[in-house]
Amino acid sequence: MGQNTIEEPQLNYLLELFSELGSMADNFVLVGAQAMRFMINQPRITKDFDFVLDVIALRGMSQSVDEVLKKLHYEVVPEARRFQFTKQIPNSPQKIRIEFLACEKERRPKNFRVDVQKHIHARACIGAEIVLRESDYQLIKGLLPNGKYTEVKLRVVHPHALLMMKLLAMDDRYKNIRGPLEVKYDRNEARVHAADITAIVHNHIQNSDFPKLFWSQFYEDNELKMRSKDIITNYFWGLDSPGIRLYAEFLQLQNMVVEEAELKRVVREVRFLLHHLAD
Image (cartoon, rainbow, N blue to C red; front, side, top):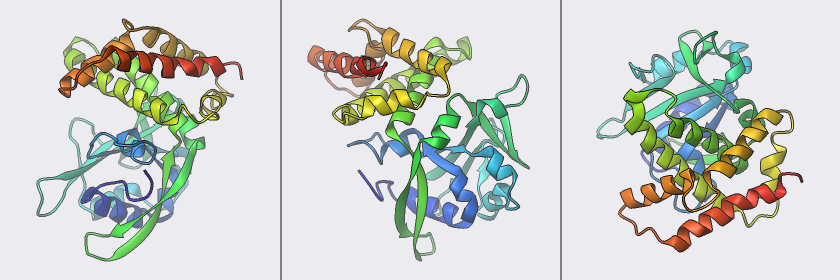
């Protein structure tokens, strides 16, 4: 864990992007699986970068995220329409892909989109306000695509805030709120989120402050706190609970042996968070 856990060549192009963003980069918080690279051992492999944006701050800036993306030859992902962008890495079959998320309260009426700047949207995300508070800078360094060495500061979500995001995402995917056409995709995403939840908890539950940090982040949002409590209670109450079934399915799809002792460990560790709910 730590600096430069992001793999090349994606690292080179992330450095390029943040160098060009300049002061705007302070309003990007890395979340998702790439953020897990800074907080757990052996994170799963992903090529995507998810960022929660401080929309209010970006709206007040004269610089344009859209102009930076155009300059660096990012293309809009057609089905996402300006909250997902991708760039083909030269002389490589690989791409770098970025997605923007933002606070739910900033969303359009009756729409999941948030207007960030001209030609730049974000996907509304419950809990994004917490993420913006619960983050720290990490130093990443390496070579730009042109071979020049550089260092940039990257805001990365705290583990307890990412855990909150993963719990909410797993719940949404498991309930298949997007409808029957997305059943297969949502089930797989729910499995991935369940596995990420177990990994974050396993790597941080020994820290006596972690459960307290998890619950204290909700101090302004009791409704979200209670929803997180209900997800933990309902999804990880025992070996037959939905979260454990999702985790077992994830292991099976990775051709790993599903052992009862491992599933019991997950139940024990995740439910330990509930012991500190009143702290």
